[in-house]
Image (cartoon, rainbow, N blue to C red):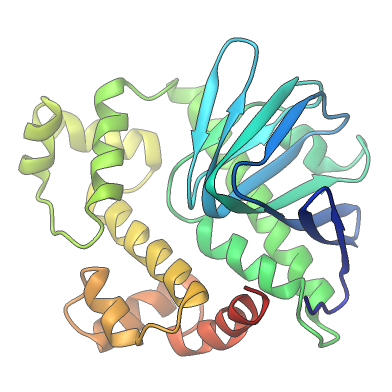
Length: 276
């Protein structure tokens, strides 16, 4: 496996690529299929985001299932174990090197991350760990800090409005399951059993954006993951993500990600395919 400024190691079948960037340790871990991680108690909090595969995190009183583009923040001292799925998992982790780093306070609460916006940042962070140019450490730090900042906002929202009601979580899951579909507000509200206006108001209060914008970001995050993972033509990915044509896809992608799909593939996709 090639690497840039990062260190590459392997232990007990788990491949680890990691680097220290200005008080943070950023890493990518690849767990083999069916891997079981015994219960342990982290000394420092951290943020973990799943690029590919799946796993279950088991705590004393609950179990959290995580798949692609999902993640969580792990408080210090939260004893837990993990069991990985049939395809293993590829995970990006951001962790402060000591408790004095501002990120330590920001991450020291269990938050289940399911919204769009994290996936493409995690993929770009993984790509920077293998970049060979002098700017890679600075870029990696930037993506890591963006992930921490986004997590802080997610935690603040949860603290302000409380845990999402079951019907809202069902609506979010339906949007994720039907990435390529154009689901109207009335159809979505009918599927989860609430009035469209109530859905729209609650959704915006929870996420700070409309249902339509949430779905658009989900499609961009899914497309970013596919671009990084596969050689599939961009036009086909655009169609699979529900965009009318490639030019529309390119405009929306650049607006959210800051670069074109072709450039994004150059930065991350080739690296991911080379290391697969």
